[in-house]
Figure 1: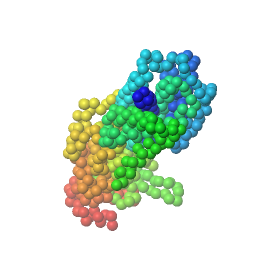
Figure 2: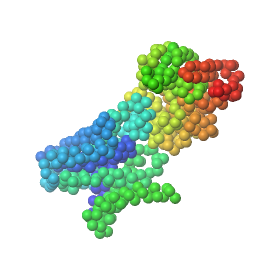
Figure 3: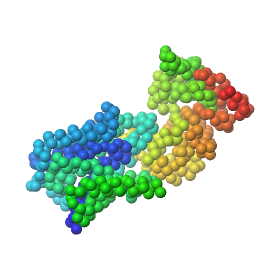
Figure 4: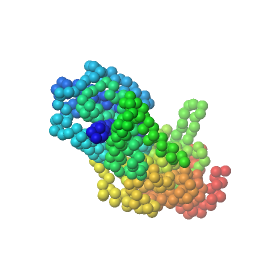
Length: 280
Length: 249
């Protein structure tokens, strides 16, 4: 049972990353893989700051700011230097590996005796994760409903149109990627404290978790639903389901070494099956 | 409303492929006039539209809107007066955003988009009222995404979006030519209704001879960068399809 509870907690923790991916991929139509780097960045900043004795809330702010800066860099590389989105993300992700290593000073930092956000808030791991998820779900939904948010969504949707309405689309994309990657770093912040360590490799392939969660979530909402609260809630649900399926796979005896293969297969099924059904 | 004084426009000046798109065009379009602009390919009608909107700079000559000299104004500065509708019905709207959200953006036009939610009850009622003019029943579907609508419905909504701001001039570049005949009629009728109801000054480019006869209060024919014919009132209504077809030789 605790096995599945832990899966739900992880699902909530990774749902922030999924929301970030939704923002870059769906809102801006930008396949951003800076994620792998900015997730670890969030974890690295958290581990180092907690080890130095900083307050967990300080580490929260710092990791989100670092994530935002990483996203801005990708945005600037793409918008100003006209580099293809995928390449811009790969460049940042590669560079961040070294940055993360420099921040951490070594490849793994355990957090054993340090006060964590759960201790600060006097809340269980589950309710902490749930609170963070709800707060950022509401914040992001509200943001996307504002006039600024509408302009953001239109930027990824019909750039020509929104530009004719006087919006600087370059600045929009840079801002959007900053928000997206600060959510990813927040996810790294939470997961690091939950698992009790930061590792230089913790972000490898993490982008697929976000993509998978977004796609699983979208199974539950028809495309005719424009209510952003519902769309984002579905993605959070997708993230939790994703972790539950992975937990079930592990429980049924799948070797942990094959976990990434299972992840890839799940995403493939989610992406491929609807297309297969559509054709007939 | 719109006044052009001796407008010349030459593309690729001084090169082998020099094209003189507009030759000494002087033209006055009065308030609430609905001009049908016709002419063969390369006759200069699109360039004329672009010069009025500011997308293309006039080589020489002056442009006045509302008696204000806008010759040096950029396109976005002129968008205070001018709304544009293009041939492709998909260009004017954001497909994944709802009808309501698209209208919100259109109503802000070039104003700053800040962090407040502007799609409340009051705004919804306002949009409903505007859309109801079309008589398509779309006012009950404000939360549907644009991509769930047909090209014709989207084009009709784009027309209404154009009048969400205080623009007094509307420039339409073959608004119905990418649509099937039935929807094309719907879009043309909506355009006429909106132009009339809101007292707009309109210039509509078209290749459809029937449309030039059924709509508009004035017809201008262009050829090789010059205005060849300019008729209004009785003279226009007496025109026959065969006559117009002959213009194109």
